Image (cartoon, rainbow, N blue to C red; front, side, top):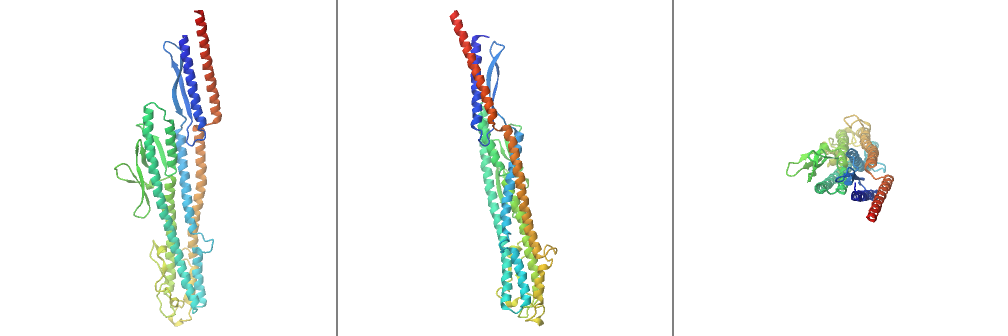
Length: 460
């Protein structure tokens, strides 16, 4: 090997070690950058013309990216986002049935039947009769208000879901654009590590909104699947939309280009969109059904008994409440129009002969409070309402427990991913020292070659 080859080897060594130091410097400067994946300098031996020994060649940069760990982290992050979204929505639902201040529906049920008890003691007292109408009206108003709040929350969650779909589409479009840019950069031999990191961050953001799975397909295209459908394929992005189906439930549609939209609602499994869908169409719907059942059962039982009695005018057969069949009973229940402002029509007596002093029917109305007239004849009115509140509370508690579990799992998988792909300052300092020593050695090699050349020139 000649002196010129030694100079070439030394020059390659200087360039290679400087390149490695530069890559290490990138890692150090991005130690706290979210989504940054550690780079490794790739260097390899290179043969020299006419020589058995070679120099060193800069091959490029390798990202310390583990697809398996990254996908696990993305899935766990999506499930954590689902749990938090679900829990937050259930918090609003639980607040509807907060009876701690004494103005909740539970108190209105109790006050309704207490007014019947007072009526039984004073069937001719105008004030007592007026109180019965007031309490009955308050009971109906409480049911309507609770129903209205549930409906309002479901409307808000629908709007939120539409907003989430809009965010999903925006991110999907940016990922598709990055896919094209990455393909162009790598096709021209340029390094696309930064764009890979940007795409990784977008995938992470997307997982907060909807369940995500990404992979490279057989043709080399980067594919993102969400809710069981292809959201991004190479440079093409699909479109998610949210609407209501014929039952009034959320319906998530996926559409690519001019193809017909497909319903992917049943495929949701993570992200905020799934949390909203579950809270709106499962939990809130269950609460609404139980509330409707309570309204219908109590109103029907009271109406049946009230119609059997007689008012001060000697007339029977009147209902106290006007209530529609399920669904919608809680939203429509009111005082019967014939009873509004007519306390004398309250049927306290069980027979016309006992008017005006009879109170047996008022007593019968009061004891409905302890009868199993609700939930298919298995629960009293208060028990049925307690079941409703307890069910909402249990769902909320389960959601809170799920948040704790999912956040722990997300933190664990992120830690595993970071240990594989993240930057360790200790390791980078060791690498800097190693490359520095290599650079110094290459410098000494150049000085040695220079001394040899100087000696050769003197000899000549």
